[in-house]
Amino acid sequence: MTSIDDVRARFPGLSDGWVRLDGPAGTLPVDTCVDAIADYMRSPAPANLGGEFDASRASDAVVARAREAIAALVGAKADEIVVGPSTTNLMFSFTRALARHWGPGDRIVCSQLDHDSNVSPWLLAARDSGATVEMLEVDPVDGTLDVEPLKGLCADGRTKWVAISGASNLTGHAPDLARAVAIAHEHGARILVDGVARVPHLPTDAAALGVDVLSTSPYKWYGPHAGVLAVRNGLLGQIEPYRVRPADYVGPFRWETGTTQIELLAGITAAAEFMTSTSIADEAARETRLLALLQEGLHEMPGVTVHGPSVTPDRAPTVVFTVRGRSPQEVDRFLASRRIAVWHGDNYACELVDALGLRESGGLVRAGIVRYTSEDDVLALLAALAELGPA
Image 1 (tube, rainbow, N blue to C red):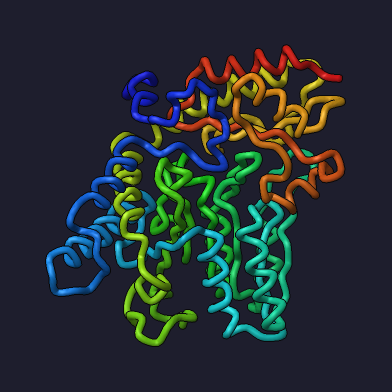
Image 2: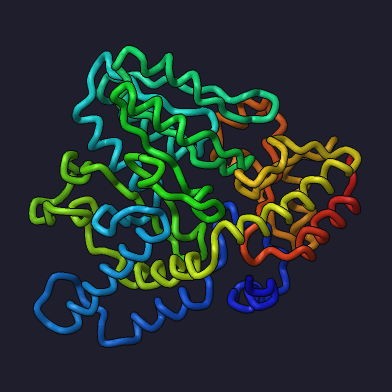
């Protein structure tokens, strides 16, 4: 594996000396991503797609290469990859299109583990169509999710879709996706997995898992701000999206409203290739070691409570905690004064924070390990928290 110093040298955003543990909300772009976007914009290539002239064909090639690079990262086919402004944007478009075929008596299953971008779009689409939404509940102590109750929710054949997190953006917990897919498909339901917090850290193969749709966000794996859906099993051609009349009817273009963000796709290609240039399993092992150092240090600290599961190799390297007598915002502000970037609040995991009973106290503090995180970063956070202490 490349040394951590060599990895960090590839991230211009680290040049200001801050300790960046804010990665679960968005990572810094890798150098090749920055260069690819700038190179495309400086070249003669910028032009819209589908033309007969050289610049347009060059742009076509950029888009095609991006789909191939993303597909290689997530275990899908290039013609299954849809790119949009954000995962949330794509989720609202996708569920709105699905809801045209729902009605009273139909059921959607979501989970308390999820980021709200995999909950609210389903709730609103169900409301507009007359369908109902049932929630898989998490353990109120550690926030883990047992998928076995899906059997009861799918058994009557009324469940159309199951929407479930591949890994929590808050606690890092990764539910048993293989089992969830098996249950959903056994009873005729489709399944969408929110892979936004999973793909950057854990080997994820949509085809091997058998998921129908997988979402991911390139800016969580060192690329630019955008969203991706891998829409599998022939669904791209079976679902009619809301779109303008001249839009291409075949393939992912029919879902990509407006002009494609071609320059960002150049950057996404570079980021995806950075991800796949080394073993994701090996990178996950390194991240897990740092997570163990961080979480064990937090457990040993007086007045600090870690909310979430124990450290295992099959979870995302994100930890959330509270400090006795201090609000999460106060902790966040103190760490920022020490040039350490974290996040506080519910981080859009609304249902999970409510289930853990932490809404009224302001949620939690979240820190995440990513590829450019060093052991020194972890130790800096622990030292700052020891300096702050409980109130």
